[in-house]
Image (tube, rainbow, N blue to C red; front, side, top):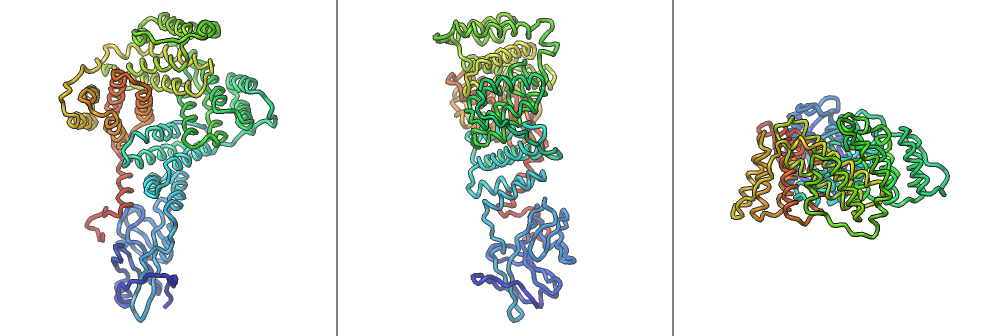
Length: 588
């Protein structure tokens, strides 16, 4: 009878007699802590891990026919001699060398294929993305972190996959992955794996059934000035010529344009028209740049062109009635933009300090007053970054005080303004492009348009008792996420936790923990990340408190969900730890 021949350095362990195995056909043995399934089939003895790699069902409960081992739980099939699967969603099962000596069966408990974990899970991550396999992505995210692979490597794989295999270019999946990469430092160690898994799942889903992106080539010329390429790029976007715009952008990248210059090209085109695609276009531009911060700007040629199609096809808000009637807001801004160079010249050399009532001015019901206050600020020397910071906070207060008397979908309206304002603010820290002032005005106009969604305004919670127990308040916050309608309770719990001298870092951990266990949608990830980003920009405790209220209320409005993705992650985690999943069905 032929058998596998173990390597010279094998560690054979006796597991029973050949005759018993022939009679039974299969046998479960425990070899140095490993549950191994032995099979006698077609005159051969085979040994594989007893846990189906898909979801852990015991393979000794399966069937063997024609050299194929089939798990009865989800009908995953494996080539018995080597463990390779017929079904990629199931993963390969580990197989072990065996030897027969004088009618006794011996097994080497070391797997035949001893691939380094980092290499194995990197390959499986690619498989999971290509075939949109949620469980495989969960296992890969866990396995790579356990193998001490830098999380940036998983982000890199996801970003490069998402920009290559989605013809429509940058979208929600890549934005979610980048947003979660940004908040990794705020999460508990055990939630790092969840964040990577959730982001990768959304990238894979975004690319599923999509054709790949076929690139335009750069121009051969390498001596074109930045100003000329920027002008051409904007002209192409203006007439919705995505192909021409892509060639201009690729030429800038190939010519060695700096990060600031590339951002300048993109944000200029993104603000040539008003509030493109309800703010998503600017947010995508910012997130693409942030993804390159994480994975390296040497990948700009792969990432930034994915933005072009969205820029060229975006809906332009000056074409919407809300921007034209009853007040011609777009026309009002056109007048301001025509004077922008003059305003900047007046402000040159001056240092602007935000007035005490500036936030309330931005939240007023008089658009002329709002626009005038921004013009006065520029005359006073206000930078894009300063104004964007102020407007982002005003937009955040709209979320914090959103009235639940409105329709549920109206949460998205205040949310879009906030994430747009945050994107303008973040972009202002990587380029001083004067065109970005237009993004500030756009965000401010939307804060004005959103005023009715604060009618009546939900009050910012009054300060709670500082003697309250912070842990109890955190528990209260978590409970609000377990039931529908806990929006105001969530805001109070978050605010009072900070009032009781609770650590902001701990509150952020708990908000992230809650987000990652839900089947959260695109906007919910954005809300958390934008809130955290704006908290990072502030020393004022009251402003941080208000932003924490905004994030907690938004999350509570969108929780709880079915938590299907968390169930998948839990299964993957238990499999990785070697835990029993299916009790009472022949498990070892």
